[in-house]
Length: 476
Image 1 (tube, rainbow, N blue to C red):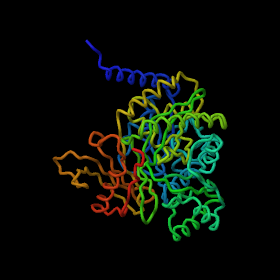
Image 2: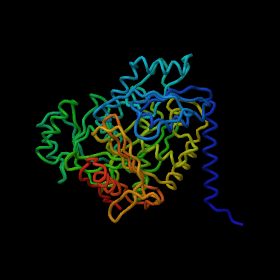
Image 3: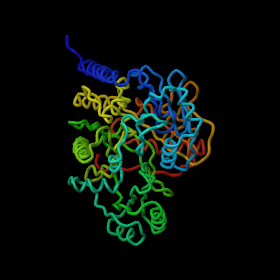
């Protein structure tokens, strides 16, 4: 009788999940955790992990309630700061400012949940250094010296120091003449991309980046950056698939996972729009391994230069030359959540916090890497997501069915090819469209699906995204 290799892989994955649960339980057992980092609905996954490990109900302190089901009372207590803000980055800055000076009603809710003040605060997506919340020490917090890696200009310096292949670029003062001159030198025929420094705080999601092609766009971008930063990185627009590679820096090694596509669409009116992510896309094997090798090199350099440990991501584009990195996020990236969801019984998020905190545990990094890469390759996922600047209080949840080259709403008796949810957000509204993994082909980019799904949302729900284009895969 022969053994199915798939059975062996399943047993190995289950054993790994059990191992990491067991080493983390003593760390979090009976600990109350005050969880931070964005809307309440986005904190539910971490709350579930922490509740299982600690045996205590966490408290979620969110920027906003968010779109989707709120946590059940037996999962967690929660309080929304109800931040209203014009953009995701402004939302995070306002939210993290509020964490340092909580309103009385928020503090009272926390004190009622944790009257003896023994809880610890923790968050995965925290953009600044938050040392404590309501007098509770931050666990696994980001140190000030780790934040500097997220400045896109500092990342540029690191590529050069490590002799990493990257796109040609220039760093110039944020003034019109210097920006125009650099753009003229670097434009390959599709314009240039300008990214500002982090003078006003870390920025992401393409909010601090401009794709510049015309004189009018140069004027608008120049005015924007003049009020936001001192220096700007100018580089050519790169055709190819925007993507990221995630890893974890341990004290003695660095592990790297599989690539994640970053759905970055092109809009005639707004330039580049970050619009979701997914693991359906596969780059060439050589590009995949080059990305993973780069992550290990960069992670080791971050540890050497700043004592960095924990989760990180490198974003970039698989262009004609291969993967060209553009930025570093020295924290848990959204794509790592998708990778972790491939094996939900392994508490990956909690594990990264323990590493960042400096816990000495039997981490077995190579086993973690092998299991998570295998499971993320086996279990794909993805979504198109976008914040809309239109006020919305009600939530719409519908199933979609493919209809020719587009979509329609599913009938009551039909199983959908994708799910749609549209609801309130701090900046107005939030739209998410998620394909059923079993209905999506593996290997190809998720972006064309998102373009079609968003076009349907515009027609059916008036979401106002307008015509969009997907990036082209120029390697496969």
